[in-house]
Amino acid sequence: MRFLVEISQLQRSSPESFAELAARVKQWTRDNADAGRIEITYLFPEGGGGMIVNADSAQELHDLIQSNPASAVLRQNVRVLLGVGQGEAVIAAAGAAAAAGGDSLEELDQGLDSLARRLGRSVGDSFRPPGG
Image (cartoon, rainbow, N blue to C red; front, top):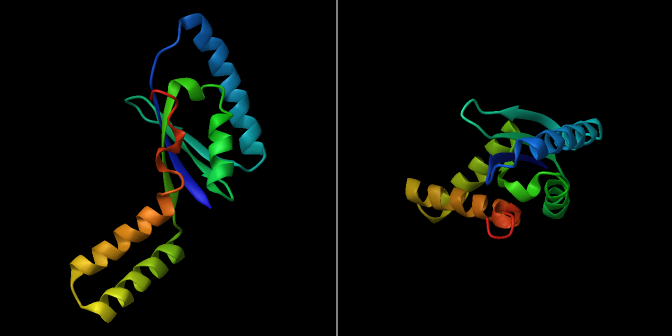
């Protein structure tokens, strides 16, 4: 599965420790990109950034994120990514379910919300550092 991990900084480190931490994170990112676990990383102009991660399970994703040398000072928001074909199948299934039980757009929205909760339940808030 593919996941979008949005990252923001919880606390700043001293300039001396930042340089060392940045070097360790850079190496961690390269190692995981070379292994195919991190597909792409990016930065936001206003601060923070993210990455697209390939993981077979929520536990694998959790372990990867926790292995980041900067995980103690970061907050990660995780979202499951669906490819176009997967997304079309989800929408078609939700539409069929809504049509079987009625034809309201509200039912379709409820079906999509339910699916999103099921997909994200095992990952969402599990990547916050203690006290974060």
